[in-house]
Length: 200
Image 1: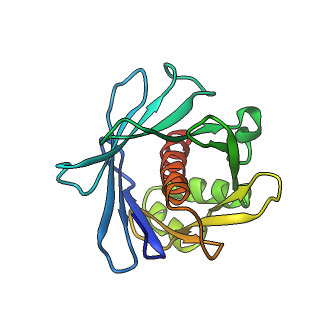
Image 2: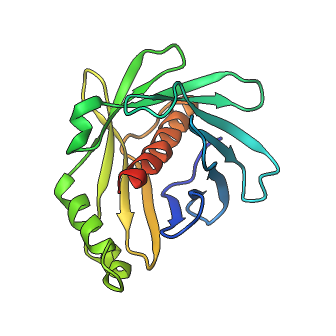
């Protein structure tokens, strides 16, 4: 699965069950993410589109509701591990911070929020009736994935202007990367968005 960038991630701000649509630069559906409600352990299906006829990946927490849970990515076709993401403990209380692991459990990258004040301002305006629909036009939180050791930025997610909808643009910051790694980054950013929405 190779992507045509920039990718667009979108979700309704008001929805019973969290859902995210991932589309490429031409508008083609790439993934549809559906988070099941009322689960003690996170259970998330990643499908090829909203019909849910073909499941591509599963995302599952390694423990019952816990701040430090690790979210594992599994290929739905053969059950092969694809990597995982974990919130970086107390560091995430102010600035969103996550660790990304390969299928062998080795941390290879980390994910950081660029400016936490932007998210605070965006969240405050979103919570105000009527004005909330304009939040996306003033504040644009962004997140970057970095490589361990070299601290090389490899992928960036940025909020885009939208009415009553969360819309993010995703672009690579390097010329090329392994396909499996690329998919792992996309799944990591999707899981991060779901967790950050829960935080408000």
